[in-house]
Every structure is written in structure tokens, then in C-alpha cells.
Amino acid sequence: MDTGNTAWILTSASLVLLMTPGLALFYGGMVRAKSVLNMMMMSFGALALIPVLWVLYGYSIAFGDDVGGGLLGDPTEFFGLKGLMTDDPEAALPAMAFVGFQAVFAIITVALISGAIADRAKFGSWMVFAGLWATIVYFPIAHWVFDFTLTGEDGVVTHTGGWIANNLKAIDFAGGTAVHINAGAAALALALVLGTRRGFGRDAMRPHNLTLVMIGAGLLWFGWFGFNAGSALAANNTASVVWVNTLVATAAATLGWLLLEKLRDGHSTSLGAASGVVAGLVAITPSCSAVSPIGAIIIGLLAGVLCALAVGLKYKLGYDDSLDVVGVHLVGGLWGTIAIGFLADPDAPAGVESLFFGGSVDQLWRQVVGALAVLVVSFVATYIIGTIIQKTMGFRIAEEDEVTGIDQVVHAESGYDFASLGSSGATAPLGGQARAEARNIEGSRA
Image 1: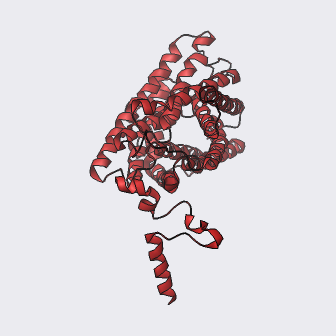
Image 2: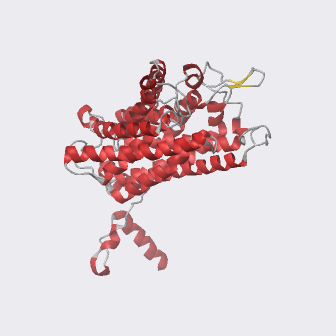
Image 3: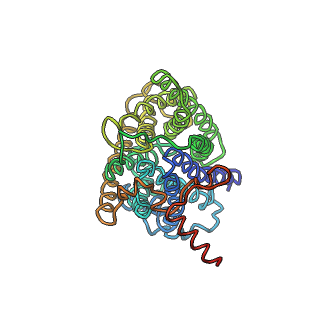
């Protein structure tokens, strides 16, 4: 067992874990002030719920021996992670290191969806959705994409994995399909189920704190090196190539987004820079082991332009994807996954020949089929789950509560204490709840 590799995987898992609080800051800054806590709570809710489900049965569904034609791992094989705590001297990594690394992927995939339904979703309903979606959609699709069939030295198959990884043989190094296309398609379905926000397309719904957005984007970029380079599962040459490709693709995507803004709108924005960062990270995720640094620049640059153009589709098509999960994660994930069929370099660690490097359309069609399969399954399943929740316990808050502000109505809190901003040390008039609390305090003192 290589202790250096183990240390790298545990470090990478910690980096990816940090991405979810980073996402909370990124999303939180993009909404209006009256919704910031709810937006951040949806990420932290996923951070609390998904690890428990992962330990109970999620890991087993994703990485248990296949029981359904490449569609599902055995949910009982590793239930409660039984049998995985014992040290195996023949293993390259401790089983628990891999369990932890994959757990944080599941967490952030669920959290990504929340950006599409900002300002209008009940927190309790979101938590129910998160648990159902992880169980029905993410865990099985992770099996499809990330679970590889293993064969012993004698040629006997010791473990059977998922169909995309082993039968289709589409390349998805770190989650372009399982994470980004999956979350993006789910975001579109859920946005359609909940409907548009009050005033969508008419009222200005500008980000309330671009400083938070920039900090969140920086944390995402930092954590993403664990996301991508950690997926090598070793501290080796593949991880090094992936690290550089992740860096340069993200930089190129940021430049592409800013350049498009300058040419189209006459100015480049901080929101555009932060969004370009995420677009580049999304696009290079599936392809980071398959392309050269020049290929990574091309993928990143085009991702910045494509995603910047795609975020405007919601106004033309009428769906309210509040924080552009569809425009960035679905479009960026599709581009990065399909681009492998055009730009994969045989000298890169994946060793695949693409259409532009002397190969045929063989890898291209595999990438397209894998991407579309995940997109369709995720969209349909999410639409059904979201509709059932909406029809039973209710998913969307009432319109008057949306006007008041979801933070106050759902969480009885506000992100900012405006009452303390009065001049000359005086405080602003207290709201009804605050006045009641003040009376209770005064009564207790008496």
C-alpha cells in the first residue's frame, strides 16, 4: 500500500469537500439578500444528508458488484460499509480512502442542482428531494460511469462494474456525465416543476454580493484540483497532467467569457469572471486526462464562450434556472464530454485517438451516447421526483412568502442585520418578530 497515494487521495477528498461550502458562497452571493441563507442552507443540507446515505447504502449501489446489467450495484454488499474497515495489504489504497473520496462527489452533485430553484423552494422539501434524487439518480449513475470491472491475474473477473465505463467505454475522467450533465439536466427538470420566480424576466434579480461570488469561485477552483487530479487515484504523472490541464482550461474559459462580455456588452464583469471559472472547470472535468494542454486551452476557451451564450437561453425559452446551472453545468458538461471525440491526444494519459488526431468517429459516438443517456435519464427521473413532491408535500413556497423573503419565512433568520445600521447609533424600527423577541427579553429581565 502506497502511503503517498493514500495521502494524496485523502487530501483530494478534503479539497473536494471544501468545494461545497465554496459553492454555498458562490450561489449565496448570486441571489438577492432576502434569500442568501436559504441558498447556502441547501448546500449545507446536502453536506449533512448525503454522507449518511452514502455510508448506509449509496456506496454499495455505486460500487457494489453489478446486479442489473451494468445499471445498479448490489445495495447490500457494502451496506453500512461492512467489510471495508479491514486493512488489505494487497490493495493499492485503503478502501475507506476511496469511499471518502467518492462521497464528496455525491455531496456536491446534489448541491449543484439547488442553484436552479433559488428563492422559491421549501427547505424541508429540498431535503426530501435530495435524499430521493441521490438514491434513485446519482448513486446508480455513479455506478454506470465510475465503477470499473476488475479482473484478477488469472483472467477471472472479480468485480463487475457499470455499463458506460465498461461496455460503452466512454471517457469521463472525473464526472462530466455523472456530476455535471447529471446535475444540469436535473436542474432543468426541477426548474420546470417549480415554475418561474415572481417577476422573472421583468424585475431585476441582481446578485446581492459579488464579493461572496468571487470568493466562492476561488474556493471552487482550488478544490477542483482535488476533484480532477485526485481522480487519478495516485500521485503520479496522470495527476500531474490533469492538474495542469485543469489550471489552463479554467484560465482560458475565464478569458473567453470576459472577451465575449466585452464584445457584446461593452464591459467585462466580475460575475462573468467567476462564471467563466466554473464553466472552464466543468468542461475540463471529463476530458482532463485525454487532451494535451493545448487541447485544454481550446476546450476552456470555447466553454467560456458557449456557456456565456447559453445562460441567456432561459429568457428565450421561458424556464427559470435561477443561477444558470443549465447554462454552465449542462452545456459545459456536454461540451467537455463530447470534445474528447474531437480533441483527445494519444500522447495524453488516456491514450485515446480522436477525430482530429488520426482517429475515427469511434470515440466520438461513444461520448455522445454516454452524455445523452445520462441527460435523458436524469431529466425524466428528476421531473417525476419533483412532481411527486410538489403534488404531495409541496415544493414551492407561497407567492406572498417569496415576496417577503424565503430566509425570514422558512428559516426565521436574515443574512444581514439591517436593524443595526441606523444613524448616530440608533437602530432602525424593529419588525414584528424582532419586537416580540424584544418584549420577551424585557419580560424576562423584569
